[in-house]
Amino acid sequence: MNLYAPSYYKRFKCIADRCKNSCCIDWEIDVDEKTYEKYLSVGGYLKENIAESDGCRYFELKNGRCPHLLENGLCRIIIDYGEDYIADICRDHPRFYNCISERREVGLGLVCEEAARIIIGDDELFSLEKIGECDDEPIDCDFDALPERDNIISLILESDKTLPVKIKMLENKYSINVNIHSMNEWLGILTELEILDKKWEEILNSATVSERKHDCCELYPNLERILVYFVYRHVSASSSYLNLRAKLGFSILSVKILVYLIERAQECNVENLIGLARIYSSEIEYSEENTDALIYEFESELAE
Ligand code: SF4
Image 1 (spheres, helix red, strand yellow):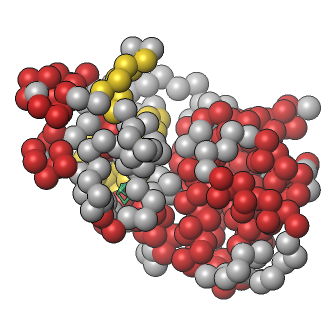
Image 2 (tube, rainbow, N blue to C red; image 1 turned 45 degrees about the vertical axis):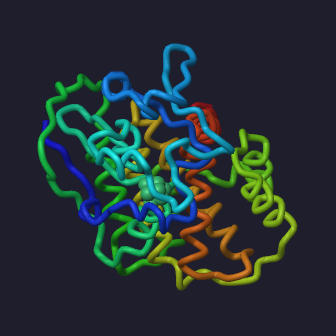
């Protein structure tokens, strides 16, 4: 199968010790079977600090940090043994994959601050390119979301309309109603979901009681890139036309939430938008339960 990625994909490189929100902190890091075997054969510290639960092995965090993360922010496994010795998940993060009938697509997740900088700050127009091939077998899909996904992305990339106009066009074309809840009700729903970082709760609580301080139209090009990201990541893997519309609703809602938050933030600039998008992704996208709960809000409305 052919493997496709956004054109910015190849520019990503983990910034390691310069990362302020390292994925080696507060995240459970799985150790896959092949890596585990390797660690057993090498021995030493590599076979320590590995716990097992429900048949899955993972590094036991120490004070919330991966036991191999050094104080200087570097990984001691990479330093001592090289990149071939890190677990699959460490090598893969922040990439995500979608298998769609005869092709596989890969992208970078907004959860990683460096990936978020590339996705949101990229000047290049979004496009996909073939980056290689993979051994996966084609999957039989009842529904092919790609033609509609590509139409949606083309509409977002049109240069002669503003972001609010494009969003309105998408809402009308796909009969999506983000106003099933007011923005404060949506924020209330977010606070009831599983929360990983107290900072997220503070952002939501503060936005609920804050007045709008800024107009974010200067950030429309960056917000458009975020909308394309959500569509590329979520709409591509839709299982039916209704599911596609619900996932598009989730994508639009995600951007509207970010607009609402940045307009109430102390400063309305790209760096702050990147920070908000990163934490939103971490809290919502990287919890399947939370993402599903929001998509379900649209699915149940559309099914009526
Ligand atoms: S979050 Fe991204 S940049 Fe930071 S350590 Fe992880 S992969 Fe590297």
